[in-house]
Image (cartoon, rainbow, N blue to C red):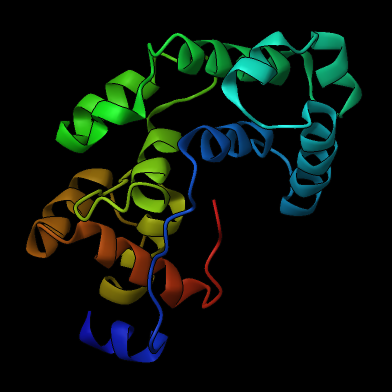
Length: 186
């Protein structure tokens, strides 16, 4: 890991800001290219005027569709917005919550699964010990740096990750950097 960290140079994680907007961006960007996601996001943000829960919850599905969102993604954004507006999903209490409690809360939102919740913990909340073993990039990073490129099983990745506890987020981030030096922003 020391070699990987030295090779990456002086870089670090920075929070992506507003919880609602971060999660909304993750929904918009699901299963499309970064360039396409940015284009759809800009149209969505312009139509919303303000990307805030109450505003998005009140938007018509047809308006969201006209921004380039699928019917399903429009439903996901409206569900996210409604849950934030009602405080069913409430970032105010997250500082006292475990990672698993936040993941459980976020996974109640349509369109948000464990991987998205883990990326949120890493890139928005900057939680130090998130280890997303279902992430293909993490598994490739371990295989490349620790197994001479040989595919690695999830269980083996879990065992290897124990050595990095309580800083598995940091290890994950540097393993990603070993594959692609330019950080992806979520």
